[in-house]
Length: 381
Image 1: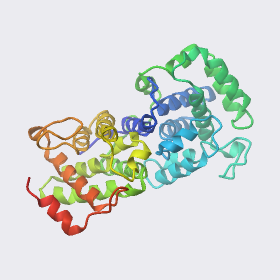
Image 2 (image 1 turned 60 degrees about the vertical axis):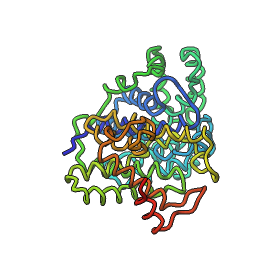
Image 3 (image 1 turned 30 degrees about the vertical axis):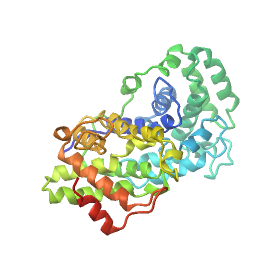
Image 4 (image 1 turned 180 degrees about the vertical axis):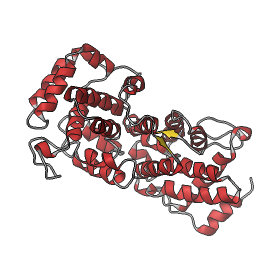
C-alpha cells in the first residue's frame, strides 16, 4: 500500500508546472516561480496572523496557482506585470481542481488570484469579496514577475516595492500591500528569493505534513495532472488516460498484483509530466521534427524522472514513468539503458504509450487503423 506525504507530492508537482518556464527558455537559476510565490505568501500570511486552515489552503493554492497555465505562448503574456488576459488560466485551473477531493479547497482561491481589488473583474467580485488567499497570491505573483533574475536582488527591491505600492487600492488590497511592505524591509527576505534551496525554506511553513495519501487519493491527483499535461496540445487531450487504460489491461493479463496495477495506472497518468517543458510550437508542429527539435523532445522523460523521484514512496512510479522511451537494445532515451535494466512495468508503459500514440491523430499524420496497429505491434524485429 502506498503512503505518500501530501506536502511532498504537491510541492513536487508544482515543480512540473514550472517546467513551462523552461519551455519558454527562462532559466532563473534559483527557486522556481511557484516556490517563490509560495514563500512570499507564507511571509505575508505571518504578518496578517491568518488562522491555520486559511494559511494551509494558501500554502497549497500558491504552489498550484498556475495549474491552468500550460501553454508557453500564454506564459509569455503573463510575464508582463500588467498582462491583459489574466483570467483564462484562472478559470482553467479552477475547472481542473474543483472536482478532486484533495484539491477542491484550493480551486476558488486559484479562480480569483488575478482579481483586482478595485473591481471590473470577469468574476464579478471585488474588494473584500475576493478570497483573502487570492489577494495575497496576486501580490506575491506580481512581486516575482517584477524580479529580474540576472540582476542582484537588493538593487531591485526598492523599485519592486514602489511598483506594488503604486497599485495598492487598484490591483491590490492595501492591507496586503502593507503586510508585504513589512516583510520587504528585511534583506534576508529578498535574498531568500534567490536561493536554490526553496524546499528547505518552505519546509517550516508546510501544513498537513502528516497527512498520508492512499492509492485512490494519489490516483485522483494524478488524473488532475494528466489532464493538465494533455491539455498542452489539442492532439493529446485524452492521451494519458488512454495510456493508463491500456497499461492496466496489459498489467492484469501479465498477472500484476493489485498494488502493481495501481502503480502502473499512476505511472501512466504521470508519464508525460515532463512535456510541460516542451514549447507549444514543437508539440503542434504540422511537419516532422528536425534533429534539434527531436533532441528537445527527448528531455521530457528526464524531467518526468526529476519531478517524481523527489516524492518518497513513488520510486517505482518514477522509474516506470521515466523509462517509457527506453528500448531493449539501449537506443532509447534519455537514459540509454538496456534490457536488463528496464523493469516490466516500464515495458508495459512503453507498449501502451506507442499503441495510443499511433491510434491518435498528430499534427503531422492521421491516426493508424486498428489492423495496421496490430500488425505494427506484433511485427518481429
